[in-house]
Amino acid sequence: MDTVKLSLIKLSDDPHEPINLLTISSYLKKYIPELEIRIIDRAYENVLEELDKFSPDIVGISAMTVEYSLAIKLCKAIKEKRQILVIVGGTHISFLPNSFDKCFDLGILGEGELPFLELIRKFKENPGTFKEKIRETEGIVFYDDKKLVIKPQKEVLQDLDEIPIPDRSLLNPNNFDVKPVYTIGTYEKRNSILTSRGCPYRCKFCVSARFFNKLRLHSARRVVDEVKYLYEKYGITHINIWDDLFCVSVPRLREIVNLLEKEGIKGKISFHATIRGNLAKDEVFELYKEMGVKSIGLGFESGSQRILEYLKGQNITIEQNLLAIEKGIRQGFKMMTSFMIGVPTEKIEDMKKTRDIMKKCINMGISRLFIYILTPFPGSEFWDLALEKGKVSEDMDFSKLSFHNKIPLLMDEDVPIKEYLKVRKQILKEMNRIKYNCLRDYFKDDPVRTLSGIMKNPFSSLLKAVGLKNEKEEVDEL
Ligand code: B12
Ligand code: SF4
Image 1 (cartoon, rainbow, N blue to C red):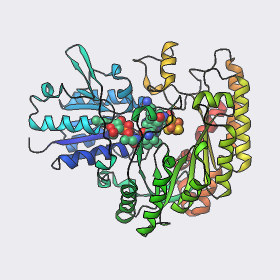
Image 2: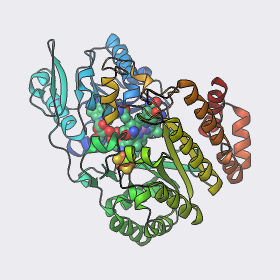
Image 3: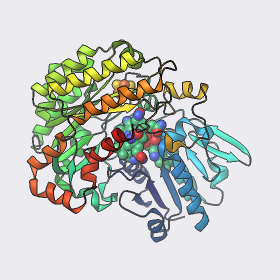
Image 4: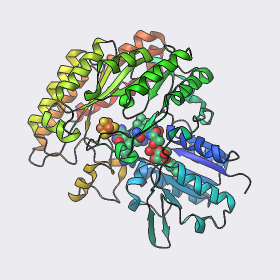
C-alpha cells in the first residue's frame, strides 16, 4: 500500500489538546512520512461525520478508564458503517487487557509508539496478511478466534528525544483560540507540553507513575525547542506542563531556564507546573519564577498525617506541604492544591482534619482548591482492593470511575454514610469560599470578555471552569 490513512480519536470533550495522540503521530511520521494522519477531537468535532469525510484505513481510539465504555460504543458505530481496522490504546486497556472488547480488532498495551509503528508497517506491507504477521509483536491484545491473547510490552522508548516535536498543525484550529486559563485566571493562547514520563515515587492512588514505570526525561534542549516552536509558530503565550513532576530534576530545570534566556524567549510565555511538598526547595521556586511559571499545582491529599503517609509514603509531611504552599504564595505564585477523601481506613476524624487544613490553606491565600473522592482506577493499588471487595469488575460500566463520584467506593466500612456526607458537605462549603477566585481573576484580566462570555451563555465553559455550577449542584443534593 502506498499510503495509509490513519484517524486518531480523542474521546474527551474537554478542550485540551490530546498531547498523547500528537506524540504518537510525530513518532509514526518520523518513520513513515507518507502516512496520512487526521486527529479527530470530540471537543470540537462530530467524530462519525469527520470519519466519513476522511475515510481512513485505520482508526485508533485513545481511552482512559472513564472513556472505555464510550470507546466501545464508538467502535461499534464505526463497524456498522464500514469494515475498517479499529484499534484501542491508552491507560485503560493497558492496565485491564482482560476487558478487551471483541468489537476492536486489536488493543495496544502501554506506551504506543513502538507497537503501533510495527502495526502500521505490517499493515502497509500487506493489509491482507497483516493480522497473521502482527501476532508476534509485543504490546498488543487481540482475540484469536475465542481465545484472548495478551502480549505485554517488554520494551519502551528509552530516549524520549527520539520523538520529534509534536506537529500542532494536526490539531483542530479551535485549539489556538484565546481561551480562559483556569490555573492563572487570564485569557491566553495556550497549549500543553509533556517533558517527561514517569515519576520516582509510588503514591498508592497514582496510575501514571506505574504506567510509565521508569522515569525518563526529554533533554532541556528539546524542551526549549518545543517551547520556542509554540511561541514562534503559533503565538502561544501560556504553556501547561502536564508532567507528573516537572521539578524532578533541578539541574535540567536550571538548564531549561538558561536555554530560554539564550533563545530570547524567557519571560514571554507563562507556565503552569507541578511540585511535591518534599521537593519544594527555595531553589525550585526561584527557578520556576525565573522560567515564567505563574501557577503551581501540589497534591496535598490529606490533612491527616496517618492518611497522608498511607497514600504517599513516609517521605512527606503535612508541614512540608503547608510550607510549600506558604513559600509559593509569598513568592507570588498562584498556588493550587487538591485533597481526597473516602480513603480506606480513613475515619471521620481524619476527614475533619482535611477540612481544617483546607480552611488553613484558604486563610493562607491559596488560589484554587479541589476535593476529590478516592477513585480506584485500574493500575492503582486501590483497583485490586476494590476488586477484592466486589466494588468493581472487569466488565463494569467504566464511565462511573471518575473523580466526581459522590459516594466513595473504598471508605472505611465503619464510617456511617450519614456522618461522611455531613463532613463532605462541610468540606464543599469550605471550598465554596474561594469559588469566585477564578472569576475575579478573569474580570481583572479582561472585564469585557468575561462579562460578554457570561451573558452569552451563563452555563458556558467559563462558569463550568470555575466550578460554580458543579459545586452548587453537589451541595444542594446532599
Ligand atoms: C493531560 C491529561 C488529561 C487531560 C487531557 C486528556 C487527553 N485526552 O489528552 C484532561 C484534563 C482532559 C484529563 C481528564 C481526565 N483525566 Co487525565 N490525565 C492527563 C495526564 C496528566 C497526561 C496525559 C498524557 O498525555 N500523557 C502522556 C502520554 C504519552 O501518555 P498516555 O496518555 O498514556 O498515552 C500513551 C499510551 O497510553 C498510548 N496511547 C494512548 N492513547 C492511544 C491511542 C492509540 C490508538 C494507541 C495505539 C496508543 C495510545 O500511547 C501513548 C504514547 O506512549 C495523565 C497523567 C499522565 N502523566 O499520563 C492523566 C490521566 C491519563 N488522567 C486520568 C484521569 C483519571 C482523568 C479523569 C478521569 C479525571 C476525572 N475528572 O475524573 C478525566 C477524564 C476526562 C474525561 N474524558 O471525561 C488518569 C487515568 C487513569 C485511568 N486508568 O484511566 C491519569 C493516568 C492520571 C492519574 N490519575 O494517574 N486528563
Ligand atoms: S501522585 Fe505525583 S508524586 Fe505521587 S507517584 Fe504519582 S506522579 Fe509521582
